Amino acid sequence: MYLVAPETTSCPVLGCGCRGRTACYPSDITDSEWEVLGPEAEQLMAELRRGRGGRPMSHDPRAMLDAIGYVTKYAVEWRALPVDFPPWEAVYAFFQRWNARGLPDRLVVRLRGRLRVAMGRRELPTACSIDSQSVKAADTVGAASRGFDGGKKINGRKRHIAVDTLGLLLAVVVTAASVQDRDGACPLLAMLRERFSTIILVSQNEQSFTL
Image (cartoon, rainbow, N blue to C red; front, side):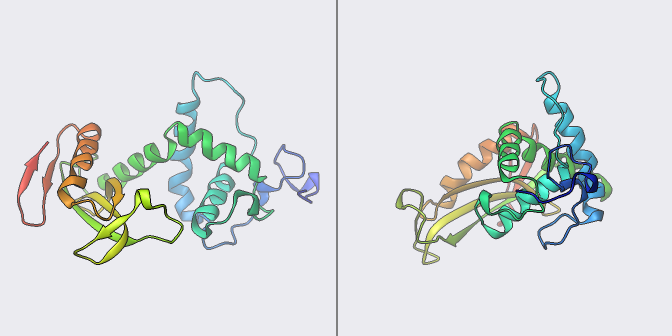
């Protein structure tokens, strides 16, 4: 139970003090970050909700995102969320619903575009670089999704990534570490082709490829 007096919070959910919480964990969004992220997140949520009906969310969006960040950062169970966040059931439902609607990916796209424009670049990238990295997997990772990278001597998974010329992430594909770079690049290139109409890939050996 959230032991918060009704007169001390503006959250309409009885006993929840999310709209009056103070950021206190390293994983919490800072005020300066929220000045940029907040308007974009709320606008995008309104756009994705348009035509779907339903009532507006009762809990504070910033508290919701902070709660998700806490779970992601510290790898705890949803039920283990501290009581200064909204009830874990509400946070989990928020995560499931908005993740299914593509909110995280769309939000990253908007913020990346804003950052590129602020740095004097076009909103959409025209070139990128691809690379891969093998990472040791925990013992709990199943054998079906892991493999051995003979070159790096690593048993785990491999992430194939594409970044723009500013180093901002464009796409990522995760495979077993045993997958060759050229084989992992195929789905990565397909993802880039789907997301960007025209882009040039510059490999480490300075060769260029046009999608």
